[in-house]
Image (cartoon, rainbow, N blue to C red; front, side):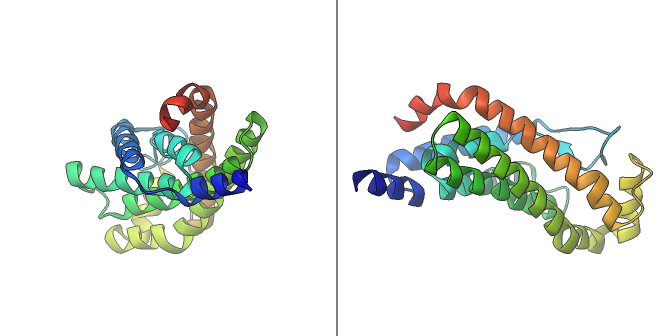
Amino acid sequence: MMDKDKKKITYTFKLNTRNIVKIGMLSAVAFLLMLIQFPIPTLFPFFLELDISELPALLGGFTLGPIAGSIIVLLKNLLLLAVRGSKTSYVGELSNFIVGAAFVVPASILYINNKSKRGAIYSLIAGILGMTIVACISNYYLIIPLFSKTLGFESVMEMAARSNKAIVDMKTYILYAVVPFNILKSMVVSIFTLLIYKRLSPLLRS
């Protein structure tokens, strides 16, 4: 009975000063990592920039639960907006929050229910799938339409086609840009998580 109660407390996120401080610190690190972005122009459109800022959110999610992980994803974007502003009329930050939460939440939920190395691997695979699927859906129905209102749909596709001539419309953009980019990004973050989580978990749980 005690094990179930402990799992429930972790899962629902206990709001106290210690956890608020942890979230704040992890959000600050995520924000700093978000500033270190770089494009991969030979593979993806230049506006799809790779970073590992979901790493602190994932560490927080594994330790404090999916709600905490989602808060970290949100706060890193708000910090970026406060410090640098938006280069994309807030669309890029919205997209980052959506796909980041889609990665962190399922991975955190599964890991909390199976805290083992195998559980971590399965959890990260679920996060990779969640991030990729949600990225496809959100880009198709929300993100690209919002970008198109500012730049025009043809301009967005033209920018995407500069890195990959196979991109000619929304479906090919999703297939050749969104899917591989999000798989690559989430896999990189997952590898870093597997390498450092066990070393940092005592500090995060203290």
